[in-house]
Image 1 (cartoon, rainbow, N blue to C red):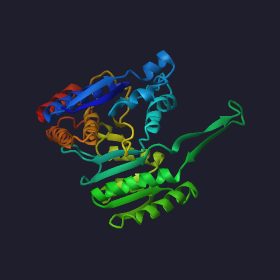
Image 2 (image 1 turned 90 degrees about the horizontal axis):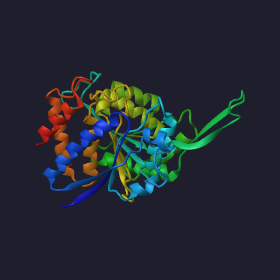
Image 3 (image 1 turned 45 degrees about the horizontal axis):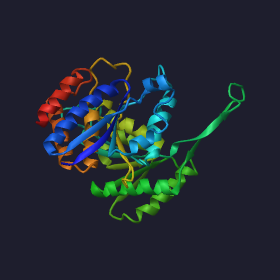
Image 4 (image 1 turned 30 degrees about the horizontal axis):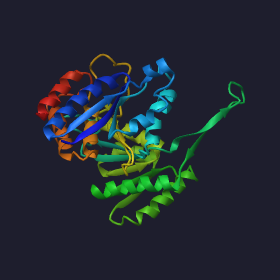
Length: 347
């Protein structure tokens, strides 16, 4: 029997609840599929930071390196730890340390889920560059606390970084409906975004079967609302992709359905899977968090591990549950109710 070693980081707030829910479903899928999931849980979180002064131990990356994949619940508790500390102390170091340069987020309406738009026939795969760009962390502050204080945040785009995310996007488009939209703001950012456009056009020559469109970020934001059915694969920088995928979550019914994968495409290091919704302190410990995004992220993890049939069964179970109206209205069904329904549909 194949056994996959998984690192589980439940994190903060509802991350603990949805991780527990997804783990039940994944274990049931593994049992049906004839493979095993061996999970090791780590307490790295804002609570861990308050106890130790760090979001994870100094050798955290090396600890995680031995696993086949990483499953993350949520990180953040801004009332006690600034988001800039929690993000740069755990999530970003993992993404960068394991070269998880492709952040993948699917956006489509599940059966029974009512989105806010008139259009419901969309299926968008948003691919966000995940390790450089605007979130590189390059910059600093000088003259702090004075009237002359200066803050500089430098976006860094490398040819290697842009080429590899664009090739990844083209490959995804080629496997889907052969349409790719590249997103920049090259009319205003005349260095980095013009560079991105130039590299995209160069890479596009290797994919003549894929239709390529170029959009500015503001125009793409409008298109995702007004004509989402016209889009297939979207590729954007770290910041722009972050913004667009929140729009994607909104039009698919909310963050409770927003799954994501942080992929190391050459598999030289583990990839990480997580729901997009964050720790949601306002509903933490109430037992009403929707676990569907977390379970969907788990299905993406199974697919990445090569267990495609099991991944498809999990997705089918999710769709069966939402088609019955379970988990389709925020706060109506408890976390455990939705989890039991998915488990029943899976069996």
